[in-house]
Amino acid sequence: MACIYVLKSEKTGKLYVGSSHEDNPLTRLESHNHGRTKSTKFGRPWVIIHEEYFSTYTEARKREIFLKTGQGRKILKERCSEW
Image (cartoon, rainbow, N blue to C red; front, side):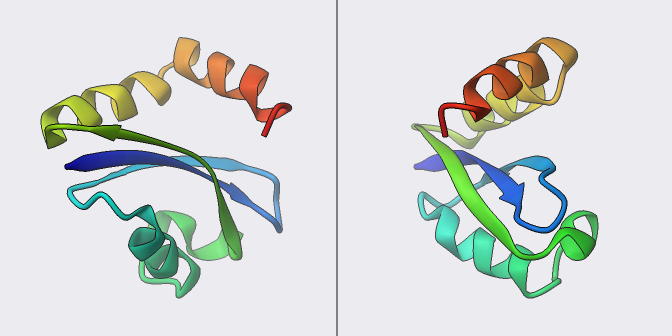
């Protein structure tokens, strides 16, 4: 099972969308917070604000790519106030 996750930087307030082959986004969160991911290294600490699960990694990647588009970011900003 694969997943996508949305992280929010407690330092900058920025959002980050990522995906994982595993169904445990906490493993990825740990990696982001320890500075092992170049793109999120300077926004530490991060917290998970949203997770979605998929049966295949391909489906998860499609959703991740959509959430990184203009329309997807708009949806995230609207929902961000709820999280």
